[in-house]
Image 1 (cartoon, helix red, strand yellow):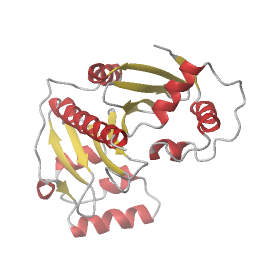
Image 2 (tube, one colour):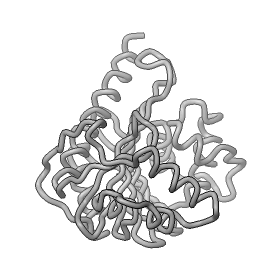
Image 3 (cartoon, one colour):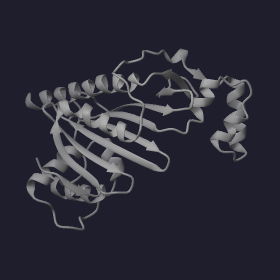
Amino acid sequence: MPQVIAALDEAARWAAEAAAGTRTWNPVYRSLAADPGPPVTSPPDPAVLDLVLRQLTAPALLVAAVTDGPRTRRLRCGLTPGSATLERSDGEELSQWSSIDVQDVPARITELLEEAGMDLAPPRLSIRRDTDARRFTPSQHRTVSAALGRGLSPEQAVAEVPDLDESLRDALTAGGPRLSLALTLHDPRRRVTEEPVTWSCLWVSGQRGLYRTDRPTRPGPGVHAVNGGDVLGTVLPVLEQGLRFAAACAASGSAQ
């Protein structure tokens, strides 16, 4: 399998020139490289260009990013029914592009998390209702908003909130590694879905443990205390959902 080391901007320029535009790209890459422009270096050989094109046009893109202090390690996985393409980056370094078997994706994500020092455990998805999440009361929310309006940092604003649940305070001021996970689905033919769909989740490591924040259905941040198994317990079904969507897109294309 070909492997290449190249900046995202340059890879995007190769792909845009080869495919005459970005219309079929996954929305994540359309946003990251809104105006690729002409390539600066010569186009790569056909195998490498095919790898980059498959990554940028993936119908299902799973993105895992771990931030620890100023450093962010990121893995973007383009999913298709039989294989996966990867773009891996570390801070400002050039991206590494490669192709692997789909069954190896969980191991690559686990490797990313272990390198960042995330507290992992065997997969165990924690089922939590949004109504059970720890969150600000209306008066606490007003206190934080006023503090932020005075120019205080988020940590300072949270410190001003009286009678705040200690787990919520720990989560909102967490200084440990943070993991964000997102799945973006799109079908350029608009047969499986009319518009792109994105699901996202965030885990933060506090002094008292690990917390998860899902995309809220109610205003204000809401967090759940979870164990380390919740991370992989979430990654695996999200990965499966992405593969099912990619298979549906492939099937709709072959049925033309």
